[in-house]
Amino acid sequence: MSEVVIMPKLGFNMDEGKLVKWHKSEGDSVSSGEVLFEIHTDKTTMEVEAVTDGIVLRLLVEEGEEMPVFTPIAIIGESGENPDEILRKYNEENGIETDEESGEEEIVEETENIEEVVIDTDLKLTPRARRYVKENSLDINSIKNIEGTGFRGGITEKDIKVSPIAKKLAHKLGLDISTVEGTGVGGKIVKDDVQRKSNILQEDHTKRVKDTIPYSGVRKIIGDRLSESKFTAPHLYFSNDVDTTNLTKFRKELNENSDLKISSTDLLVYALGKALKKYPEINASLVGDVIEQYESINIGIAVAGNNGLVVPVVKNIQEKTIQDVAKETKDLISRARVGKLLSEEYNGGTFTISNLGMFGIDSFTAIINPPELAILAVSSINKKPVVKTNEDGEDVILIRPMMNIQLSVDHRIIDGLLAAEFLGYVREILENPIKILM
Image (tube, rainbow, N blue to C red):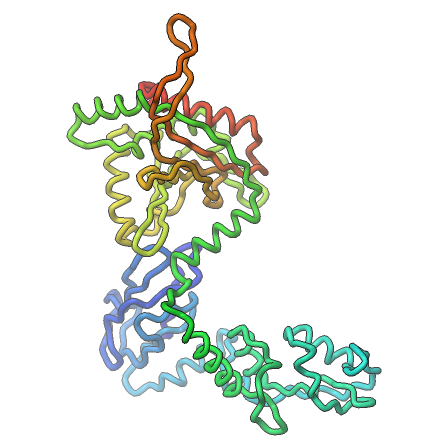
């Protein structure tokens, strides 16, 4: 039985995948359950198994190529079957139009018997031609040299000659079709004209470029999600300074009595778990028109990996000890940095922490990781003069290790009072760390 293998969708936010490696070549036999290929999704590399027995008749995608999900990437069938015919039937059944079906023929429309519209004193276009120019983002000045065949020399849509495939390709390449010189019949712009113009522009551009890095995969997904978050959710920011004197002593005492070393991030994650349990309104998401509050406290930790920013999630913190959290955090972060996380390990977060303290950052604000409602930015610890009241009630200036924390919240759901109370409680826990274990 023949099968058209498609790029699978392995995650909710996955729009495309990169084919890393084929485990079979054309002409090889393959059995159901055998690994057929490896793909790199938004944050990890995964093996994909064949679901049918047969012969690999054709590989449609080369290793290293990125393709949208559901795109045909291989054809499996019986020996002697025609892979072109299998693909043609698949496209026909799924309503996929090929270039061959679209053809290079110009779309013919009935002659317009309507009055031309004067754009300026030198140029006249019919309403349909004007609409065509607008829809295709053409530069009015660039079509002034077209000899119009309409009333008094007015330009009609038929005077702007471009094949459907050329038009589609120009749109895909972001190319102004009016800058392309047509070599087809009657000066018509065809696919090769668009490709030739694009190659010339690319060659000119390449001469000025030192290096290129594809904006795809993890980086593109992160960019798209954070752009949506920033411009959809009105961010509101709250900042506080934390005296880490007691926190540092507490961490030292824990590590002196434990075989597993506990990091500052572990303490921060565990403290946030306590705070989110006290303020469940922040341990929530906006899903459509419904606010979902969660019983499970799942905190994501922003990590810079080989393939961009990754956010592994420590789940069900409310049920775990500080040692459990430390062990799980170390494992997740180490695998996140080399792209070895499973999809479920970076999904399902209810709150995120971004700690840049180790890089010496004094303060920064973070963008909320949707669909969550808040994120905490943690900066470095610096010694600063702080006013404290001594036992005699006198104000004295002391030098203390201070850490800046900034909370970003979705102001559609979380108001200022709630955010301020939450951040204040986080500060209280961190400055009195014994409460972390209570």
